Length: 305
Ligand code: FAD
Image 1 (cartoon, protein in one colour):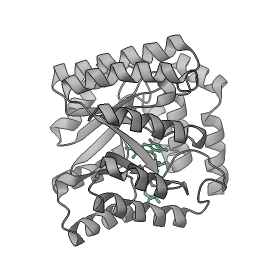
Image 2 (cartoon, helix red, strand yellow; image 1 turned 45 degrees about the horizontal axis):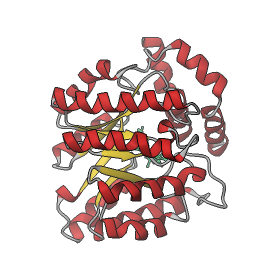
Image 3 (cartoon, rainbow, N blue to C red; image 1 turned 45 degrees about the vertical axis):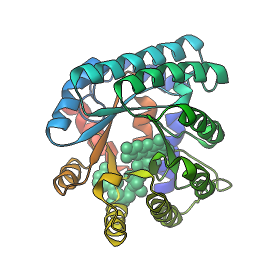
Image 4 (tube, rainbow, N blue to C red; image 1 turned 180 degrees about the vertical axis):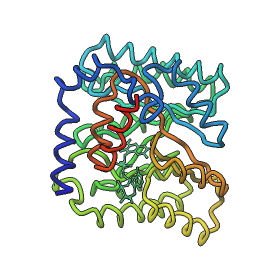
């Protein structure tokens, strides 16, 4: 039953028609609950509030699988002005983005041009930009782009997904860069040809990757709401004397708020991923797929306004 629900919401997450309807409806019901606001300016107060509670942030302008040059360029401008506003407002925030939002599905040179402009700005303001990992057909291109940017910029990081068989090798290949890396379980619908079908195998692989990444000296972000993974990381750090400033925990905005604050109180860096923008539909559906309990949470949000 759980697998059927997950597949259903992942199927819905790619429905362009429903996405359009969602955009027209606006995102006000999710604002301040699952997303920051419908634009960056209206998200600033939520970010400041998190910062005041001892939580760091990474912001993501929602929108993926962009198929027009015009929109890809608009996303780039938006990202640049977000970085400038983070700096101006003195927020403790990084930026996350997706290569498809900058034009990966359109033209390789377009993504390189757009991302170069973003990273020039980020480097100037000393703000880390993380390239989110998308689905399998975009994985190799995303890793190649990351390597290309990493040769020139220090303020760029990326994400590896524990559900993919290939990730252990990708982690080894990236080892020489000692990158800032975010490790996640993986959020897309992938076939057993590419990804572990069983949750317990994903969890085991996740633990293995966390250990390898931390022991390689990578600054590692463990992005999970799973207590078992969080406890494992804490124990591992203790066992190998890895200081708290070599890793951080990350969670999504609106999820496990109490746990986020507890981790920060315990002296761990806790970063909250705050999405914002009108294009919230795909993101929202993937959260539904991960945890059906989010459905109740979301509907409560809708009716409470
Ligand atoms: P799950 O395996 O979903 O849950 C394990 C257990 O954790 C549950 O059984 C429950 O006990 C507990 N739990 C989970 N959620 C909650 C909750 N809301 N409240 C209470 N308990 C809960 N995926 C990508 O593919 N690419 C990315 O670039 C990417 N970036 C991400 C960035 C961040 C900061 C985070 C947090 C996730 C990101 N993801 C990304 C999504 C990720 O891959 C997973 O799909 C998602 O995090 C769900 O997996 P999980 O490890 O949180 O735990």
